[in-house]
Amino acid sequence: MVSSDQRRRQLAREKFERQQQRREEARRRTRRLTVVIASAVAVVAVIGVGSYLALGDDDTKDKADAAASPGPSDPASPSPSESKAPEPAMKIDKKAGYAMSLKTSQGDIKFTMDAAKTPHTTNSFKYLADKGFFDGTKCHRLTTQNIFVLQCGDPKGDGTGGPGYTIPDENLTGLGKAGADGTVTYPAGVVAMANAGPQTGGSQFFLVYKDSKLPPNYTPFGTMDAASLKVVKDIGAAGAEGGAPDGAPKKAVKITKAAVDKS
Image 1: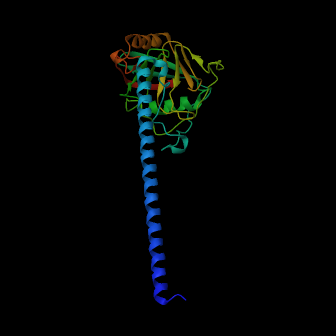
Image 2: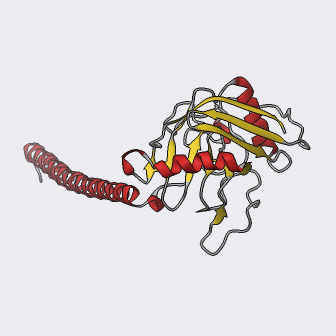
Image 3: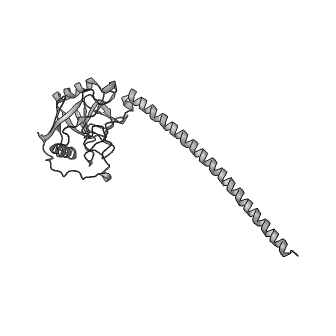
């Protein structure tokens, strides 16, 4: 028969063994956690280096080849659900013709707008021009390789500005059906909307001075006259700052006055 003292010693021994077992399990968990953390840190480090190299490689390509650059973009335009303000109320006559005139530091640029096919775009440009939105802004981007456009309409002048609302895409089939390479030709003289994706047009637009292959994602809404196209071609011929294929135009282009009137 087990005495009470023996029983107490047995219970004490079992308690000690349980404590030792729990401590060993805790040590094993700590070692496993340390290994997991170390592995995670190593993975993050590898991904970080890979990302850095990928970005560096893309940046090199962008500087060496304009095809690696994104198309005309308006990254500051919020998505429709994030718009800070509603699109301006429709006030133009959709059956009438409208023309936009830009007085710039490099010469006058004028283009007609197709209100019937691009009523939202035409109405927005009329609204913004009447407010003086474009006055004092500069054309911040010129591309001279693979795509040939002068991009304007950003109040910040760095490609991140917009009017605080978005307008829908329009007339995306107006230049024809995309070819096997997924592009259409935006011919010299066309004026189209920059964007940050579907339905994100804002105030930024681009003037095509030489035929350019682009995906049909940019609303073509205007056409320059011959004299205006020559002004933009001259700006393009001077190139971008630093000789880069994509950057601020060497011939700085400041819009001193913009107006939209019935033509």
